[in-house]
Image (spheres, rainbow, N blue to C red):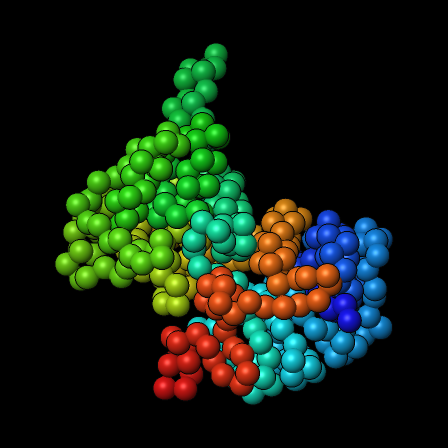
Length: 374
């Protein structure tokens, strides 16, 4: 019997993305799956229902949840929605295990097999499934546009009859996927760019994009491509070196994050107060508490003439492309388990094993289990 893959209309505040776009829905149907969607699921991403050829439309959200063998989501389904799923169902999405304990418990107690895309291992074979990276690239791009909109200056150098306009100085803190995209975008817009990351291995990546790498003498290489948490002494050394570069920048974009923990505080109130009036700071870690002491998630703050933006869900501001990329990530994740329209998960595959959050009434992800069950 063909597997039923469901996609609902996201209801989380400010969430405009959809987990299934017409291109990917068509591929799943050609693979033999039945695709069942909630009407209007793609409208906020500019994918109206008429573009989804071959898709079946659920009469209600309840019907969709009761019939779905696999539920694809962007944000975690609610406790109430989880309660309507079949105990044998599979859920795939950004499940936020560190921040959504009630939903994780509901998935466990309902005996749902769930996969958190945040947990997909960062290995070469899984790059096409890496939703964290695809959405981070969008956030890095958009962050520079936000900075440019708030900055009372041109980003590029301009030679005019009224004289030469010097290019803006941009500092990017954190050279992961979001940071590298921010560097590339700022460079394309003509800014002079510096960048810093505690992982010294990113030095060549930064330079390859035409930016200068800020040397602080601190290195924090961590497992899985992430940075480890810095010691107090390392933070002090880093801060001293960075503060002078922050003060010299017209725009600062911060992207530093440690999965499952509050964002590291890198930009202090004192550092902001050394910045020139009219300068801008865009904090991509706002939802995790912010890299800047003065950041407020979802708000734009003026402090001593410096604009501090704390945007949330930046990929949702480019929902069309963000949804395309995310849906392709999900397709690439599911494809190895789809055979002739049926779902068969190979639990010896490290991608499925490591991405699994709950299964058979148990929380499989060890850190989440310790947090929730002690």
